[in-house]
Amino acid sequence: MRQEGKRRISFIMPVIIALWLSFLFLPFRGIKAASILFISLLIAIPALKFTHRLVRKIHLNAEGFLQRMPADRRFLFLLLIPVFVLPFAADDYVIVVVFISGIYIMLALGLNVVVGFTGLLNLGFVAFYAIGAYSYALINTKTGLGFWSAAPLAIGITTVSGFLLAIPALRLRGDYLALVTLGFGEIVRLVFNNWDSFTKGPNGISGIEPPALAGVSLGRLSYYYLLVLLCVIIAVFIIRRVHDSKIGRAWIAIREDEIASAAMGINTTRYKLYSFAFGAFWAGLAGCLFAAKMRFVSPESFSFMESVLILCMVIIGGIGSIGGVLAGAVVLVALPEALREIQLYRMLALGCGLVFLMVFRPQGLFGGKSVSAGG
Image (cartoon, rainbow, N blue to C red; front, side, top):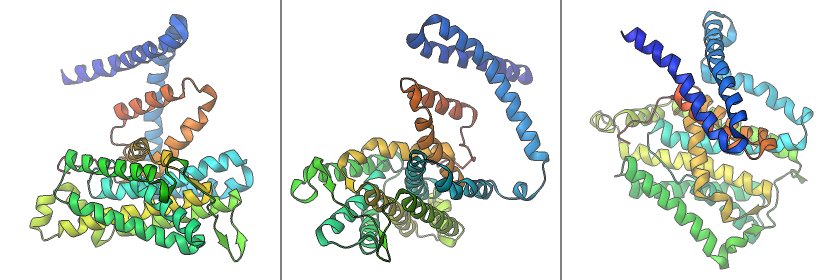
């Protein structure tokens, strides 16, 4: 009976999905185009399932170096090949998209420390991004310090802000913690937007200097690309090492069961502080690189939707998976740009893709563990 029920569900599900997507498409193109889409999806969904099974069999049966590597490292190994060739083979538009992907990768890696490793839901992570960008912009424009002197100060300020936010939030879990972090993100944005005498309010801060090395300005796009690529590689290496260390194991224990962790002697308060501060560190670095590249910062770049986007990158890639976070960031930055030609439908296509992923792969692209309900 169970086998028959599963077969019925597997048969009915493609029909329901095809009907739903065709219904969404109906107001845009009419009943004829919606009918064609319905028939195409009825053919495409079973074909995709068959292809997925075939690829899975090939993957399980194949042997060799890549197959013996963990999924995260396999993805990173394959990713490094095209990214080093990109500045020599692609045009400026593609390099800009990959540069922005690198910024979001660092943000997603920082949030993954808090959400994926420690299990603390943070909906205001963009606040640390804003603090890093504004700190660098203010230090650079008001004191004249260059990138290599101002950036460490800005990152330090951002790390301290993450530490300070964690202090009142330590007693909270789940939805309450999410509300506190959400409020913190909005407070930071409103302060930057309304403090005209210091941050120039909604007009933003302009005239930010690009980094320079040995007297040579790194203002060229290819130089920025290599700088961001270097920072991403360092971030992945350090975060992976921390994840495998005593601190990382303590974070995972807190995520799985905070009460049991405390009973086993883990100082949960201290490790939560470490988590918030360590995650904020990478957001501060991303903010400095963003401000140095754009040479202008304004509050509009740090809205609540940025926090939602970064969280989506972590969830899509797989919560707690470093390679998955990289994949999620690249997908959510590159896919909308690839669909820019169909401006009217690209958000519809992106939303449908997310729904498909949540239905067929709810654990994310790389199967990270989900955050526990306790926090």
